[in-house]
Amino acid sequence: MNHSAITSNKYPILKVEDLTVYQGNYLAVRDVSFELISGTDTAIVGPNGAGKSTLVQALLGIIPYAAGKIEIFDRPIGRLGRLCHQIGYMPQNFIFDRSFPISVSELVGLGYVERQQGRGAQLCVPIINSMHPRPERKKEAIDRALKRVNGYHLRRQAIGSLSGGELKRVLLAYCLVMPRQLLILDEAFAGVDAQGAADFYNLLNELKQQENWTVLQISHDLDMVNHHCDRVLCLNQSLICTGTPEIALSPQNLLATYGPNFSRYHHRH
Ligand SMILES: Nc1ncnc2c1ncn2[C@@H]1O[C@H](COP(=O)(O)OP(=O)(O)OP(=O)(O)O)[C@@H](O)[C@H]1O
Image 1 (cartoon, rainbow, N blue to C red):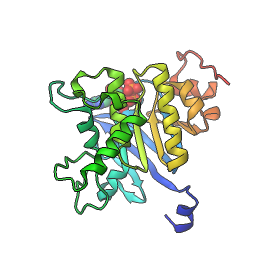
Image 2: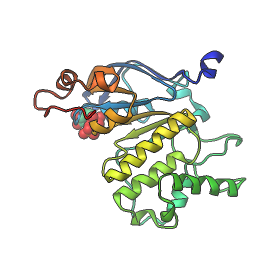
Image 3: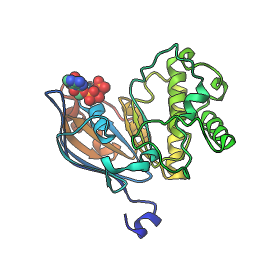
């Protein structure tokens, strides 16, 4: 990353070259290449089983890849060190023990890592920080994140008591509790009501435009993708096409991605 690129606010955050990933013996992702530029929102679309979750899990180092190259922040995925805290990830399914006694605020706080701390976790997973040096700063960050997702009223509730849509808000707050450069969302808005989804997209837009966050999101909501995303990757094991929503979601490209049974998608302009 050279200095002029950084000052221009537009530089590659993620580079993927010829990525191939297996799930067991099954070839789930084949020869996929693309780049994400800072401050943009990119959607991955494709039918069920197309390899979308597999792709993002490989990008995050959650599952291994068989071939290809992944660089995040100009570094190989295995050498991110503390830079992994610059990545927020919301998985498709958040499976947890509903009887586990943890409040919403406590869960969101697990995503918070003080920048000036010395050594930290090397993996892209939360660390539990019971000896936090500045608890008031952490509390402010938690409250702010919850307010941004309209979830502040839930802060004292046990996570096991949340509805599906409320849990999504809280998980997004977990990602927002500290500044990140890259936010990866796997069907983050599935199960969220229409107003909630519109609010989420507005929030993503704000993060992107005001704070230069880069967003990579898997979505089945082609209308939302068409209206809010800058780029689209159409995936069906391999990358079928990439481009602006207008190009990538053209009837021809949707047919190539989803096959002939896909009911034709009409743009709402
Ligand atoms: N552990 C596994 N072992 C074998 N095959 C798997 C495993 N996990 C996933 N797969 C297969 O890999 C393929 C890609 O799955 P993946 O979850 O990446 O698809 P997806 O595009 O995210 O689908 P969806 O839209 O339904 O969430 C699917 O055919 C799935 O059945």
